[in-house]
Picture 1 (cartoon, rainbow, N blue to C red):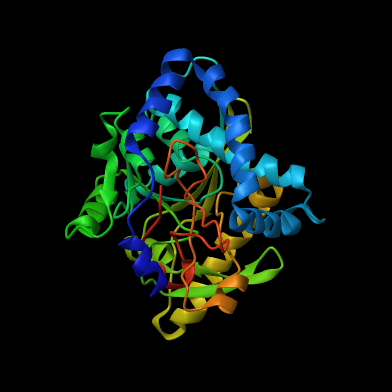
Picture 2 (picture 1 turned 120 degrees about the vertical axis):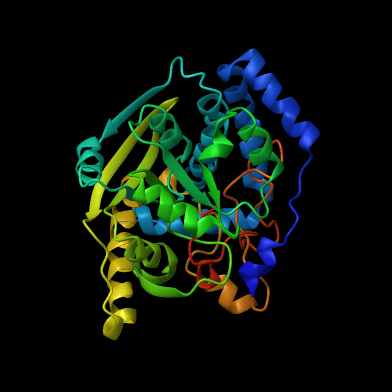
Length: 343
């Protein structure tokens, strides 16, 4: 399976070069790091044909018009900006950052039932802003994620927050689901990205930006098993060091009738995809699934595997995007793992 192959795939990139770039940015400041992003982004826009194709296909749909080269550059640049900001968010260097939060009442309502809740996120925007908000949470926040092929950039960046490891529940560990159940039972929050997953997850095709796209059913299956309230989460970049965090009630409880399991799951996934589409149209430059999301090229090129670029595999953010095909090197939703989400 294509996704299974990704799970065992070794990342590319020099940890030494990444560490140098991180040190320069954190030592000389955000403005220095930001200045470096312009030539870096331009270079990768020029050389990564697959990334350009994936970006243009998404932007055509989200913008409702043919995307221009400038649109594509802005899309790549927004991704690199979020990766730069990640350094400062995780190291708690929040000076000059402005993070607005809406929908906290939905979280409070979900937690008022003497039980935890589940957050469904996506690869739209920054997941790190959730961690910033989580530092002020009255209850612990756990992140359910797949780390089988964690990239050098991710490993090094996570060292900036010594407490981060304690908040991660790693998919694939024998006790992972037990820890999720225990966390919710204690009244804690468990977050997961629900638009793609790493291994052999069952998926369903639902309408997304005008055409069927495959989404994993695993996150909704987990929500149904937990029986906890579900809240959507979107942490979108709105400008230089500016983020808007949206929490939005999704369901008091996800219910699935055994006799109608396939249909019920498809309905829940469609509801999730519809809300994701709404935010993707509103914040198109925050869409960070740089691969053939609708599987057009994948269908033509099978058995080759799609590739993805959620995180930087090198000091610059886009080396992970396949240069020759435009398919993502990581996450394939059609054969994704039940509960997975890359960070």
